[in-house]
Amino acid sequence: MTVQQPVLVVIDDEQGILDVVGRFGRRAGFEVFTCSGGREGLAEIQVRRADLVLVDLRMPDVGGLDVLRALREITPQCQAVLMTAAQRCRNCSA
Image (cartoon, rainbow, N blue to C red):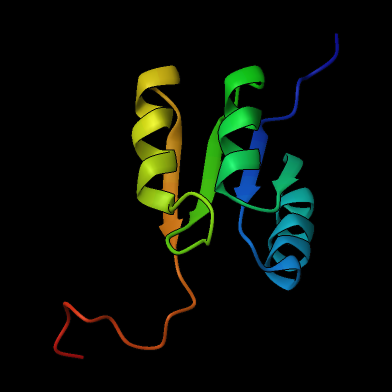
């Protein structure tokens, strides 16, 4: 009997982030698929059943919130994490 690995899709426009998060995901036991932008990520989540999606908030083509909205329509049960490398949030007092 073969145990299927959980699937992680990482969506970010920074190659370094994709490399690091992908490496950690594989070490944690995920089958990892990386996408270099929101448009590519939208295409990926339409054809692949993901267990977890990590998506960058700010990307030049399609933003993370738009990707998350689409994900909720396509696969409502999928877990998602919105991430950003922004040093300061405009809406935060930090």
